[in-house]
Amino acid sequence: MKKKPAEWSHARIKGRLPPQLVRCPGCQQHIYPQSSACPHCGGTLKILKKKQLQALRRAQAAAAKLQKLFDNA
Image 1 (cartoon, rainbow, N blue to C red):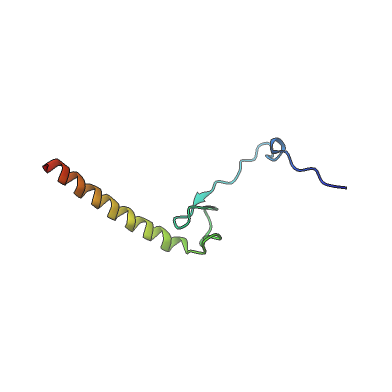
Image 2: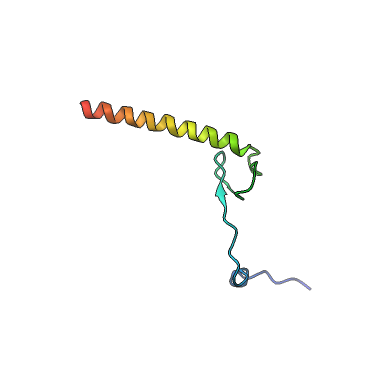
């Protein structure tokens, strides 16, 4: 006997919230927040987060430099 596919309306158990997921800083796939490594890209989350923050700082510095150049023009 074939099993019926689960209906989404019955997938959630009453009173139980779905798990909260976060995005991997490397590949942007959703992962569990307690993970130490991404199962999709294999990257170590501490290292990927550090690289993401460095890139953000560089982007903010470039935006500030552009703003300064436009203000002087």
